[in-house]
Image (tube, rainbow, N blue to C red; front, side, top):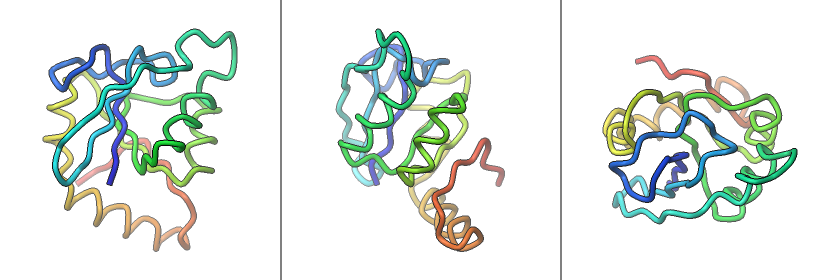
Length: 129
């Protein structure tokens, strides 16, 4: 599964950005191998529609889940339409966020929630163990 994390820098030691759509970077992390790619966020300088623009780029790259402190209403709508799950992470580095959510937990939790919602796309504000 490919995970996107809005980041303040280009590596896993960077803090998770507090602004999803206006984050300077997205780290795209393979949940199986933990290999990642840093991409510049094309929505950073958008005058409006930054959330939708950011989600379009992530969807184009095959992202399945987003780790973020919060997302705005337009971004949440776009994420849901794209079928991307959203997991709340805050006040941590990107590597700490990845350590908190194990790949097995993500797969099981997404499967359970999709079944509960009749396979509709899911946006979570918080995952609770």
